[in-house]
Image (cartoon, rainbow, N blue to C red; front, side, top):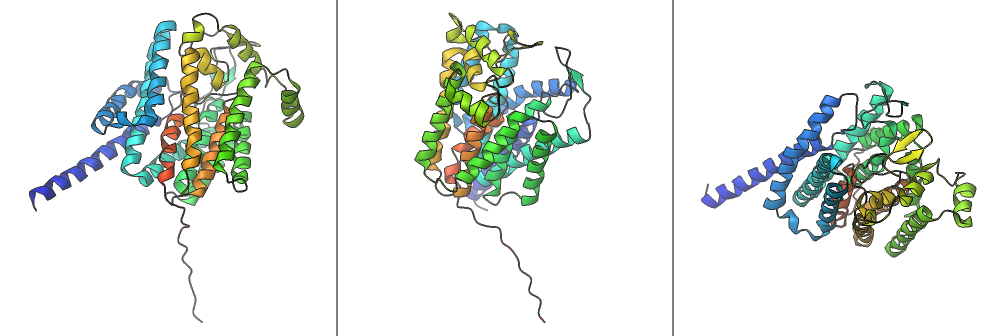
Length: 405
């Protein structure tokens, strides 16, 4: 074997090792840390964020991931998040740092893995989150974890992701990951069905209305993409949806909103009291807080009945409440970058439908929930930039057996 061949072989082996380590780190970092039944495991996973981030930093420099322009808004958001927390709420800086390190790790490693093998990486991501979703359903059915009592002395069931509403941050994204992998022939139908059925069963059994709404929106939009195929039309629709949401947060006392929520959705205008939290959060935005917010996990100061919260139950408002105007603007840039990707996905129409449906569904879920700090959002953001490169969907080969008479 020649010297050049030896170097090539060494490079291939090193690439395989780096990829394998990255997969292992992704499995570790993606494991949920909000389950309070076994706090020792959660603490170990939080500590693991530091060596995992170190590996991501090595990949960031070695593979020049820092040169990717589409990741600049994400780096900016991480910086704003840490700065605002350091200035306004130093007591929660450690929690903010761990959260940023985890988000940083999945952002870097997802981009690195996709750049090396898009199809294999889609399979790994779908498998990781699919298995977690199945375990979430099993934790409800088999009662793996003991219940607990909240800070407000309210009894709560405890599942793999934490309390029942934590699934809001994962379900739609997991379905999107499965859809991306399935439509490039990299994951099986049976596994996808098990994951989706498990997730749907969980949200129905636990009556998680936010996730149920997200599922209905996903299905409706996915069907609509088969009729309305104009990328420009969908981009305009999503921008109008974001504008609708922002106006609704600021001023809900209009007949348009009343007819939509009360008449069409049969919901009250307070969304089960959530809008009272929004009003309190906006009323507390004074002076320097417009610039730096209150930092990550601020003190609980939002009241609803007997409960007290440190977030307004709205992703858009939370970005303003926690990180001020800079944090809100950076988050909006991230969203609009995702919207721009719609026009670039041309090769695989099935993936385009899944992407549009999941993007709109997550935007709707964010009206009454939050999902940006739970890793799936960063993975989804990175995948969006590689979706245009995926080949056209090719149906799986079906073998027909002929019996000779």
